[in-house]
Length: 103
Image (tube, rainbow, N blue to C red; front, side, top):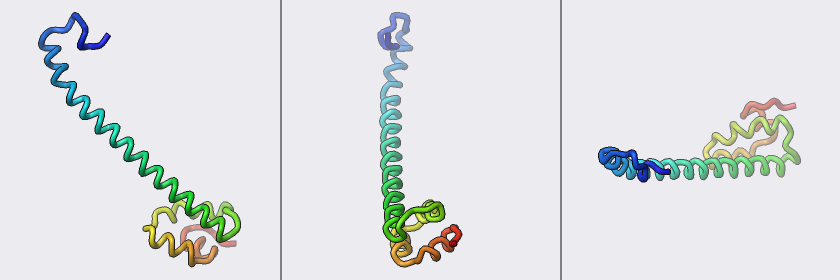
């Protein structure tokens, strides 16, 4: 049973429900839109992470614990810097610059 069909509601209650319904629907739509936006952002971040991991694997043959440890700091970089560093820096330079330990 919904509130709108309840026989115990007064006219004031029904009027309040009718006023609140559009506000609730707006809130619900805004909440859904925010959820979709967050989902897209998370998806883009995951895609970017996968690209970084794949590039490190291709360049250095595998993704060991040291290289895996620099993925998060690399993801904080602007795209242009990230690409340049991944394509030009050596393994040792990447580890030194982004917090890993060479060795």
